[in-house]
Length: 457
Ligand code: CS2
Figure (cartoon, helix red, strand yellow):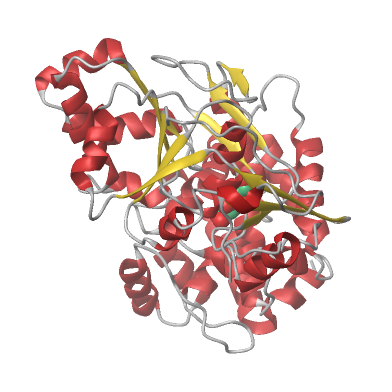
């Protein structure tokens, strides 16, 4: 079967949007070749005259597919009313970090590279031998050559993600690099948002059907897209049509606690209820009302949203996006890496609520204890119908050992999970009201299952 290419992109069906003149060089180096990058930053860059070199840390599948297609790939935008197809031309080169480390370091150091963007998942920032080490070595090479300024822009779902990146990279600098970095290196924060499920065979089938040629790097995404970037670049940047602000932290908090917090909550409850996707979970009796209460009564009071934003209205728009039946976002995809995601999505919310009212007089933590119980039950590895649930998490061993030591008693299992200090902050772990409520919900989930628990809330 013919693959998508520069040559055949010119004769695709008329309703497929195709790139105009493609950029010759890449001012952006992107690390992490996942679907989210292709449907988010690559699309924003496609609307500028900049190009991207996309680098995959380990698995070559995506970059090999891109290389076989002149870097072209399709984004299918799936709304409730149907699909629209766009071929993106922003990716002009690919790189495999595991086998081309020298080339990766040279590219980080190159005068032509102005911005490095990252989607490497939450856990990757904790591994100094991984991407942080690569960045530090490449930046050292740039500094040694007295190269031009560089911006490293994190696009992962972490709070204060610019600082998180800086904290992962800077300690690895030698003194000379540190001095260069003081005036030549910036780590702005950014809030990224677009729901992009992992591509499946159905994604490639759709692309073939709509294009008439094969695209093995195709992705699908919801219509909504947002990018809020801290306006702190060390050198030039593409003219991305993003929102530039000095209060990214407020936007990150709003998105992580509301969108991602509810996403993870639904993912654990859905997985327990043997439901495949988020939209199907939201359709369970009681689920949408629960999500709405959770946002209104627990998430919204935990922080002040950025100027002009209302958490309730934002939450309604999030629920509408989650309802989109064309997006088949699997609960198990969102459920992975809970120990890396829940601190900013769930435990930060609980910590702020608990700290606002240490005596537990006015703030009721009952509703937000349900996702804590759902994650605890999920970690044990069995759905309500007895199906195996994979625990794909870097702290898998710690979690499983803690749960095994706790036995079957719900209160003991909650204590075990809340006792994992790398994940749960003290004000949450020490909160008796939360522990009691979570143990109560875990008992309900054990006895009746997630679907019935939601229905009877
Ligand atoms: C999801 C996110 O997989 C997950 O954990 O919650 O990827 C979510 O779809 C995006 O952050 C939406 O912008």
